[in-house]
Image (tube, rainbow, N blue to C red; front, top):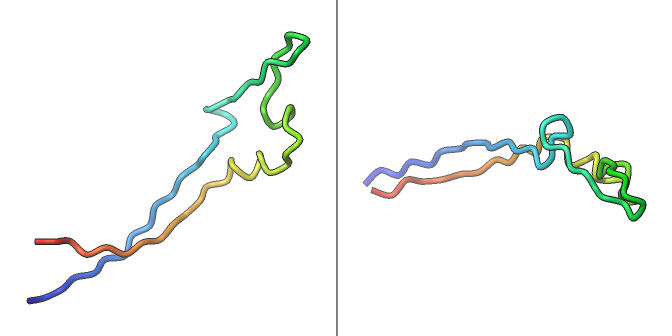
Length: 60
């Protein structure tokens, strides 16, 4: 019996600031972008694509 193993990659954007704009409603009633409202500076890192590599073997 022969075994085949394949390598593939997957790329994902968790947050696209142009297409997936997330607004936060502030206490004063104003809407602001999540990147400006957050004290977490890593929000902008979510806009970068993440590439993952994986191996798989089909079952017959």
